[in-house]
Image (cartoon, rainbow, N blue to C red; front, side):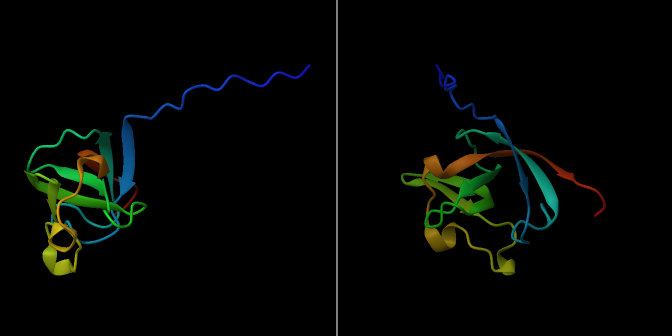
Length: 111
């Protein structure tokens, strides 16, 4: 008799690795930089965070959390001149859309 394997709970690794693709966070972050992100919803103003876009949840954003409001976090780009989309365009981001905060930046290979 064939028995199905037990289903183990799906574990979620507390660290996430993200590549920077755009110039919206220059001079802090550049395209090609890699980020190590701690998955948490605990954020303080001034921290760089990874969040899901409110109307396009498959799109991850790298932004600076500037202030907490009733509807969530106000996220800003460090380089608004790059045509970046941030809370100026979509308002406060709900806490459930914050994936985590950036712990460190590193480079893969040559810059």
